[in-house]
Image (cartoon, rainbow, N blue to C red; front, side, top):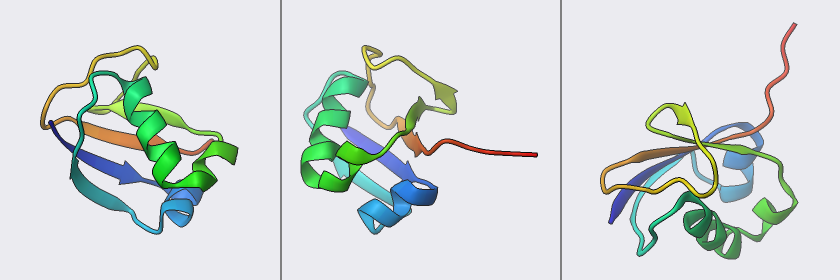
Length: 78
């Protein structure tokens, strides 16, 4: 399945990318997260939320081809 991955803030620093398109043999958000943590070891120490197609999702959520997946670091505001 083809996915568009977007990285923001500290996550972009850890991956060295802000965006990538990749093919992945995964079915759930958790499976994708495991693949990314193996490829980018720094993610294992990071805190982030995952959104699929602009909606925050659970790790057990299914993925579909052409989905946009964003890894979002904690946000602070004021």
